[in-house]
Length: 270
Image (cartoon, rainbow, N blue to C red):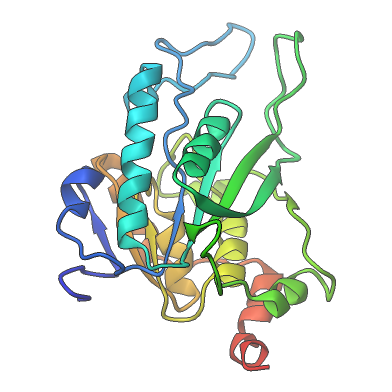
């Protein structure tokens, strides 16, 4: 318990209903995969293909409602995350420009944009445009452009993960493999590989990491394995059940992550 905030817990509720009881500056970092507002009302499929676009009620908004929703949750995240804490936000072209504009309007310090390249992305079956094979991640510091300072970036950890070289902002990481979905599927589940990298380079052991739209729980699953505390919020029961099962199981970390994690204290103390 941290000032009324219970850590290492999934809150199965609407984020806005939960967060109002949390104290200011109570969480170290936030790593979140919010709704992208990309769902089609009835989905989309073809008789000759298994490809189906997302059709989820939690991912469907009118544009003005989506902007208002995004501003509201970002404002609450900024309140509960500590000054100069890290905020990582996933997106695609459907929403990332809106999210970036909102962050700029609120005068956040943007540290990096990260491009996640998925070499096993689904093909584009319309043959009318390029195959979409990337997502974007905005890395922001929870402070103004002018005042932001001393955000967590474990430079030597990043180098160790990248075979001794500076880590670049384009990450080649496949979609979550089948073994990571053995307890159930989420249409936007993030792979363990990408969350381990983010958590290792942008947080310290025992830091509290928030995921306020946690889905099937990859953030908490990885945070637990890497000796971080975590808080997840998800209002869909079927996804919290998947997350709970994953939290009880053993996580298979990528080999490079395991190698660096075993030396983390030594690397951070340099």
